[in-house]
Length: 477
Image: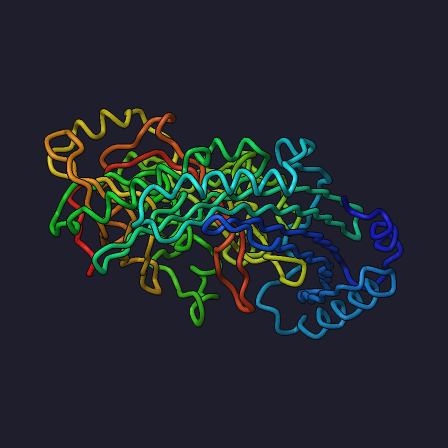
């Protein structure tokens, strides 16, 4: 919980800025792991501090501090104000025109008050799955892990706005490696994309119970499988791979600061241009992409972004047509375009920038059996293992852990090292079937990187299974 002493200290702050804000983050991370039946030492860390932002005229200034006393906060605010004054004459953005936060409010992750298992109970659960993965002498590495993050965040402004947001993130992980005859194959639980908000129910959501034996069996299947064939095929991507596809070839290209050129020297630009919004056909009519911070169990759900803007669901792509970028209040003012509440920071010592949050592909109508039954010559791929995309987020090449051929509407041969490649717009225009809500998976990762200085942040992606026609598929080396 946020210490009310910090609130009282903030209430005494004063400065000559036109507007100022304070954001305190208090975050505790615990990592539990059992590896090859041996419990690993508990890893725990705490990260706590505050970011002060001041606006003076057209300029803005930032200062972060780990000193949350009244004196520490006042010193940081004074420094932010000095920097705002120094930047007023050269600011790219006129902060007098930027929309200020107006609403106070609260947010809490689902089931936040429900206790989680003890350290001993976590180790017992992890040890059980780790032991059950030992199906065969060819299983050479087994690891089960659980990451738990508690994050309390407080946002205050000199205008009297107060926003309290409490998060609990749970991330079950499992990895099994099989080796024989010089070949190693690995299967994981969701390719380390199993971050979600909530409690113990997240284990069932990601099928953690029974994962040890299931993943070991699939790793052994891959050892005996032939390499993925090459050539054009219909491609059925399962939700844990759709996550990566959405993230890299829709999420990053639609970040408005990237479109405006801010990331060129580090994370790259975008093939998307401002004039494309409202008319550009990004994908087939089946493609509907939403920014949705309201799906509370998803990794990046919240009520307000880190600039204090109220968050709500918005369509970015509707029926295949590009409608809206991922741009927070500052980028919206700069580009004179509507956006979303996605100004987000990786921690207390980073300023908010345009980031993905929950970026989801809305479900369609087909069952998984119907999608498979309609494919004559295809392949299904699960769980990302490699990715490469150019600095305009256009041409890409992705690899998966597990592949299985589809012939004449039937699942047939398991294949290893399946890969596919394409060009973002052409690929999404080839979207030919979208699964219904029963095929949807909700995934999340804490590892999305962007920004200078670098920020690694939590994002979420929910998607049904999807079919893409005539995709270039190939096997690994």
